[in-house]
Length: 258
Image (tube, rainbow, N blue to C red):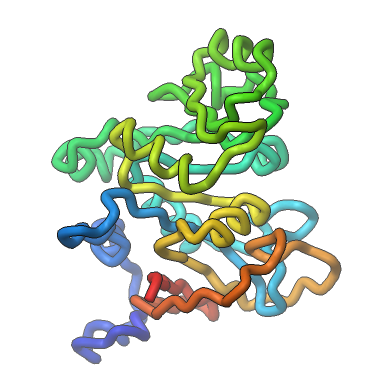
């Protein structure tokens, strides 16, 4: 891997070499909030092909690679909570975050739990509560839903050990309220892994602070979703490039709200 931006020392940053996890953690460290800035910081981590496909045959793994997965794991290891849509949980058969010994000291120093909690955004709570995500997480899985969610599904979630967090007055979740609710629980380093529908909602609500996007050197064609779905925003939001890494044609970019 080599750093393309920013470059501070060409003899080091442009060298094509394997990066350690500590180096990746430093590159992707959450920013320290400035006085007056929001306490919570929400970043997204997504992968896209050259022609804009976020998935192939319904899953993102086939357009990823080993280094992308290392960055995926690093981003998780830095986060307090991982925000994910219910459809992605069902399609990708989501599992709870696992303890990573390589990040144990860093998480302890930051006052974090051993692993990030998974927070599932779901209006209908149409979830399989026998999944390991609910039966064997290191820390309880959170479910973000609306105040009008079906009481029997809420009860089933709580019986399975999940913590239900109300983040909307109706059936669905209001993105800004979800961010506030997580911050009130002490989760200020937020990471979303999609899917595209959830990311689109976060973008439309104006709550996304950062995008970590892997551009895969592949063409998929077909009708695959983009990384963000849903209606367009009234005015396109501008983000600025923070860092850019490259390996074997894969580009690993980090953009921050301007």
